[in-house]
Image 1 (cartoon, rainbow over the protein chains, first blue to last red):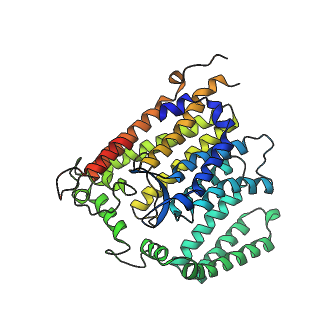
Image 2 (tube, each protein chain N blue to C red; image 1 turned 135 degrees about the vertical axis):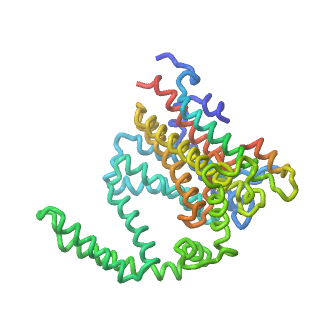
Image 3 (cartoon, rainbow over the protein chains, first blue to last red; image 1 turned 90 degrees about the vertical axis):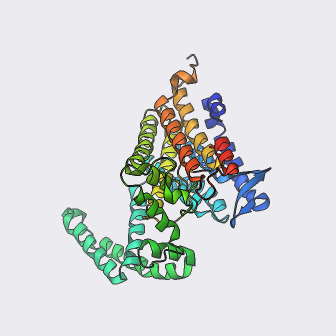
Length: 358
Length: 53
């Protein structure tokens, strides 16, 4: 697979990005007709005794499509219609993935916001998303009035710390009203829009519910396995939690628990450093690309690997709700490994090809 | 400009990290597929790991 990706001319990916994206969307849509249902999810095509998950390949296809769109010199992400078009490229696969239902894969596409931000999307989009998440979590933990009081204090500090000419009491007031409206809507959304298993996962995460034998079983066993590894771990093939089969899905989404138990803190740190090194290397390579297309694609690769890495490890150590996001190159799954390998090596091919570009 | 070999221009640092991660992943999948209950490999999973990971 790697040799095929490297053998293809680097310009091929740019020239046929739209067609690759179209084929990828068709493969996702085809799941509704020809897909195989496993554990309630219609995410796979069955080919003989093997299965293929198209959403794993759609990440590379969407990256190519977004890079192709943004590499147009006329594109300015400060313009609203351009923002909508870029978001549409991101959201098309999500619309097809969410009903499968595969929220974990759909979540990954939010990583492209970071790429758009790098390419000129106004920063208030990212800040709004961040503040919304913080307010949502705070409202679940604290009383709504306490969250609004905190927001009032923060807005007051920002207002009076700013330059006199920048102070706008009306804007601050509107922000406070919007925040208050959002805070009071959180409980309704949580109780009426979220499904029971979503509510359970948040309640476990926030410590509101203790259910070690039911919904909290995975996270609890995962934490026990990692904690039992200590500094240096129990040794390869010596993990008692691993060998006892206590951690569900250990060879897929929870593979990092085996690292924690058998290789300890030091082994876990090595894995984290390897991922961090790879991400920094991709960003470094992306910045030295000669074309905008390959630079944007490089950032897409870094963003996708980052969100997989971050969400998976956060989930395994119990600081993120349980969601099906595998650890790249690590978790068991043929489609996943193929998808990540294609994603990465297309970029390495572009990077290798840059000496031929002017 | 004359085309140069991919092997000469490929970023070997990224390739090395990729190989390291895949190898470590393979070792950990192998370990998690070996349960103490029967003391033997879960052959299907093991074979799949070898073929696809």
